[in-house]
Image 1 (cartoon, rainbow, N blue to C red):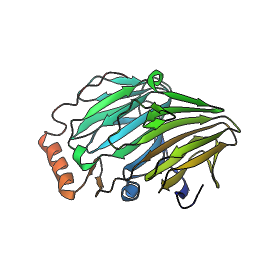
Image 2 (image 1 turned 135 degrees about the vertical axis):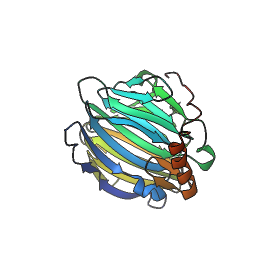
Image 3 (image 1 turned 30 degrees about the vertical axis):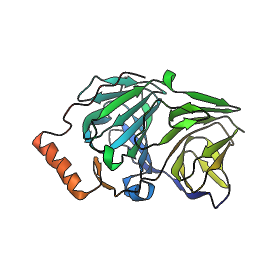
Length: 285
């Protein structure tokens, strides 16, 4: 890699939070919204394990996108304005929270659900769009097979295949599995900010080594290539996007451009006008 075009800016271990007192939830945070200004439009990346009666009960969001990718088990995603969707392993839910949405993510069945959740900021012109929710089944996710590598294209493009998710943030999201000893050159477009998160295994990225629970942050000035090599069977997720050069303010469930907009969102919630009109229904992909 040329240090003048693609720069690995940080290698760090995700924070493992103590499990909930009843043992039904635990999580590992690669990065949170405290780094929104640095990584904008990437806002947060969380790996979750949960089983009943744990889960994320109904909560509100506004002004950004959320990605839920299920690794194992089942997750019930409930939209206050639409039917419940049960995600199986490999399924994806992509939510544009837009002007406001109320939803929940809960484990389904008796086993443990394992998933990641990524928050991505929306440009100012899309923050008040009508909210929408898309469920993308594993069978609908485009797959690129390379020697020793399987790449699922969730959003954006890779090797001529485009993901089903329509990202307002223009993000590319790749779900990658590498066999032991496999190498994968990953082209990165110019002017990108991104992260590689290792969910399982051991990965070498250029001169850096990252095992499970580690994140590598990168940025590119010119088009270049991330060279990934696995010393054992490895599962990783790559998220990248063009930098969003707008003010960003995160306050709890809201991501807006100004403090006044945050105050307005809370006022809507108190007045009972939040998340209206209803979200647009979207069929399974």
